[in-house]
Image 1 (spheres, one colour):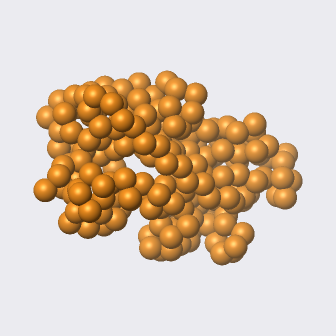
Image 2 (cartoon, rainbow, N blue to C red):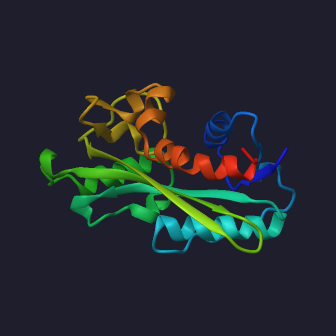
Length: 195
């Protein structure tokens, strides 16, 4: 069976990818890799960071590698936090506090935002494929819901009338930026498995 290294230590992302590919590929996480490369996410785009990570893992492992970078882009903040989403505070609660403080004077109808995810598949020595997913929403004035992680409690999806944190994992995956990017990447992953 073909092997693929997924450059993440996030168990939720790993489970999502393994569920998507079924038994077609053996997915190895970065946590299972003996000496993972240290990759600084210093690019100006999600696509750039995902490609940098995927190439580093492909070269270090000799295996095809998949990497993602994702974050929240808020229109009223000029696209921030963007590629700095994970570093916008010391923890999820701190990141949400900072975001809401920066949006304090912004009216609700001007709090449009989107989650964006870029996935990159790199093959050792060459080819890369990038797929992107986006989910549009709005930032609420206070958190709602107990599920999810990151900015999910303040990211409201108008078509569902709920935040990401109020959705089941299955509901979230069906519409989320990461779910979309994974589904777009699936044909490329199945091609690796010869299917």
